[in-house]
Figure 1 (spheres, rainbow, N blue to C red):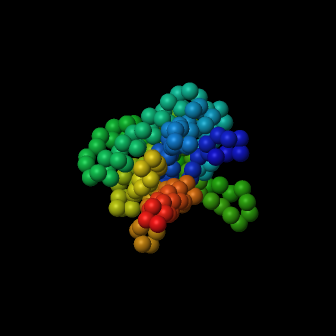
Figure 2 (cartoon, rainbow, N blue to C red):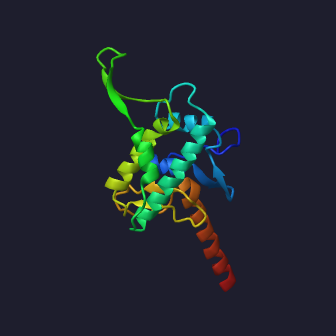
Figure 3 (spheres, one colour):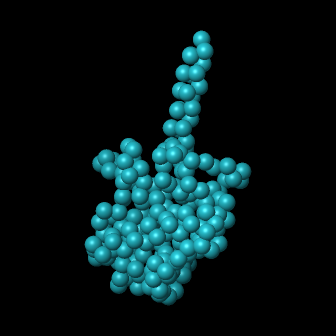
Length: 194
């Protein structure tokens, strides 16, 4: 939760596309959509490290972001199940992914190659997320793409552990809750036996 009591975005998935679908999550047992306005979308993109041009926030941006998010979620779930899916919505976003490289040399001895994108449509603004989703769907080891094992959680993550045994979106969010529940259950069972 953010300081003001609102639910803050969680960047715990280890993948931009998965973090994006995780903008719809559970908080206090309720399903919460973190993308309520164009400003929310812009704030999320900025927090994810994606530059967004000033004035990009609009009602059409939040509609496009929600459409892209739910389509990515559907594609990930379908890919995880080993089935074929229709990528047409994602492809419509990818069409707008036009960009070009630019040499940025604002600091001495530190030139950097940056990607400049068209900021003129919601689809173009969200194109980096669409590209991340396309890359995830085509190159990720889906044995490592998992949904949190907490039955009330809807978050996804990329398991980057060496053992490949990560079970929770986050130990702080779901892992500890599961451990406390299991501990209480064991103690109630022990108390019932005595």
